Length: 312
Length: 207
Image 1 (cartoon, one colour):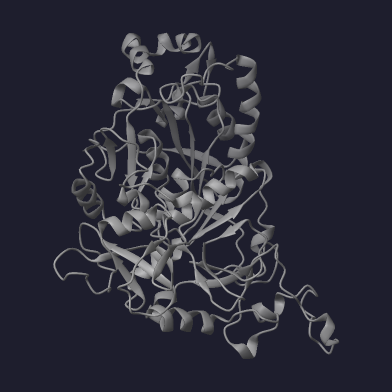
Image 2 (cartoon, rainbow over the protein chains, first blue to last red):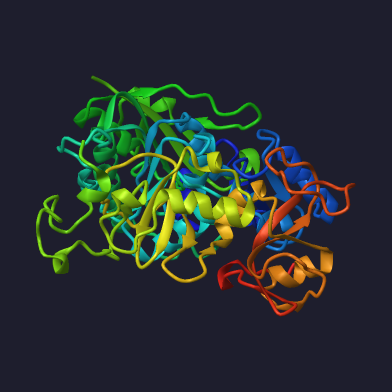
């Protein structure tokens, strides 16, 4: 719990924050509307006697009262996907549209990727990338189980992602050379997952964070470069560390052609603004448009989510 | 743009231009190649055509041909066919492209569990409707005696009734009263027995 003490100065209700971090998370599922309407999925759960509570902020995000999501017919049919509640935010911030070309830079195991496919109504091209080949099989398995057919899976280092497989710099009419939107759900120190995995902070150190920050900056910079002017890039992590959040945004605002954009979290979901100062370091004040999610606000895991627009 | 199937050869586009038949392009198992529209356009020997794939789903399960209008078809590996909801360059060196829908290049083509769950809702033929206990047995991956089936032998769509109406489903209802039936997966029906082909990673004990 020691690393979390760093955030006492950010929170007037730090005791509530710490108490929430010690409680386990409920089992949450998202309805996959590519295969069933929210109403039908809920009817099927009712018919099986699986008790659930609809979250305050999303009719398709359900908290199960008891058993895991796997042991029910609606899950077997791919109508439901087990997904931590707070991790449904970045795809909503990304707001992908049917027919667009969208990149999920760090996609495996695919909860957010399949949510993006759902929001695109399984049309357009969704490129799900991950540098870990082993985790890609989980991504493919989840996507196919949920009935997704617009996903192209790639295995590249997102920091220098290449469009070459997609016909970049050829004469092909159907080549892809830029994305309309990109999600960077970056590898991070995972402080916000402590409720799911109590060992999450065992390897925590400032040195480790400094190492990850370089990767985060590299992936986010590439996402901005690979997205067309006017396009949207969403940056998210499951950690509280400002070094991995606001400082990374501050860096790309300096180095790349992009601007922070305001995004309202869904009604009923409470977030805190990004912080413009940390340990004597000041950031571009625009980073305050980002969202910090503390576990005690909505009884979820911890999270960070920011929306950027690529400028011309 | 040149013909995609023709571009698929290893020779970088000049394959088949008067070369000996021994150097005809072969199926490259490591990448996704778009399959030809018709037999006339076939370059890679043995590669199924889009026309054949669409017709197979229609003849076997009465899945309407227009079901596939929004999808391109691809081959990777030996006879593994994939459906992708968009148009991209061919060949394409990616790890996955849409959904694996069908195993071809063998005497009896076999649809995948995921394809049947997604596209089998349109099916009206060779759909075996299971009751609650039979459905549970099937989802667990177990084989079972099912002497009442009088349809075709071979790969069938196993389905069951589940709450709520599906707008997509055209399957005749089992009893006429409950909701539409929903495809569970692919069964192999032989000699009065329904074998479950639900892959290990998808099996579930739902009893």
